[in-house]
Length: 464
Image 1 (spheres, rainbow, N blue to C red):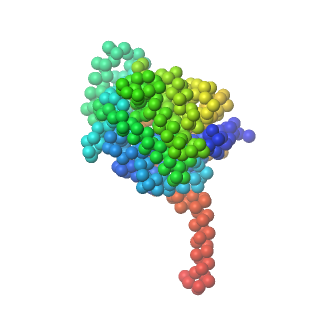
Image 2: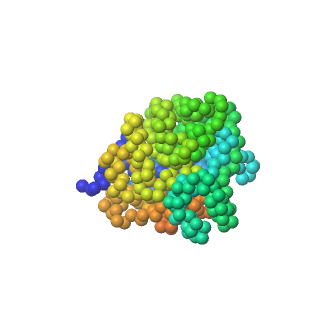
Image 3: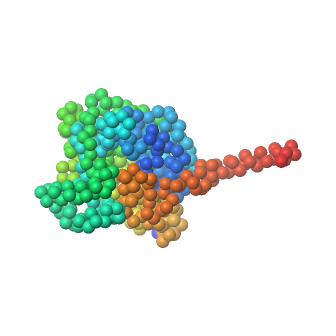
């Protein structure tokens, strides 16, 4: 009996979706879709390689259910699920991943909100609840990216003592911030442009209702295209989270003000999706347990929001922070989100997923101590897609460990091809025959039987 057997026990997500084990792949946008949001062979190979590696489900990158230019994502070419053209391509992905007894949950995100950029072709600005621009605060962000930034900006990063920076008051911090960001801007305007956001256009009331309806339509399309579930992206400072946070939602209509009003958009999306997809379809939510900013949304409010969502959801996917406060959003050590996961699990009778755990010993501990029901692997399976299979086979020492340098994220921010410092195959999965859909064990058997019958036909006719 292995020390990690409990990681490989099956689990049901609220009776809606059966998973073969307690390890899933986290949603990560690796900028593999084309500029119109269509996936291709690389997209398929990316997910197939992780399904082959042993996870029980892949949760896709944040997928946008609209084509409107104000979704704010043209710089990061997110996947889309806005009509049947995208549904057909998604169905190809689903069938390929299903060949490995792996489920597919499509994460849906209505837009980048206050973190979005103007559309590169039309110039249309991103839309958000209110005209508030995002701004990365190094006090709550630089530790997560310190290794990667140090390799890119060695001289500038010498100016930063993490403990000192994190303890600066506002009066001390802002002059220092301007100096460092100006230095970085001279070297990398692309990264500098991500630090200070553009001012978004406030959404009109009818557009908010439109987004709710489009979310439900996209969820139904996922179901019709054989997807196993959908997940509402309501974390990390994207559009859904913008409505929840008092920092970014300053509306005075029924979508702003009180917590109930700020949660209205999220609750409406979930209730409309549930009505469209029926009670048998798996619907989850990804939410930050705390924004980790002084004027942000804090944990008790998050619990209250989840209470409003509970009638419509089947699981809770834990996160933390936002792009203005990245330290907990991209954890620099194991177990940083466990406190939120444990709180969710105690409060609600729903399965809980927790990310940010790279060490199998910490993963099994989180399961056995009741912190979470499922461990969600992100950068751990970027570095080593075979993490689950190696653990199951007792080959823990063979895992290629993520160094948490965030090079994968920084390359995305720089608009260059995604890469990993420890896995040179990242971004090149489509060139490996084992990741081709025709070479899955199930499909291979069908092809071999077909070729045998075909060969028999030629032999009987005396052909060559």
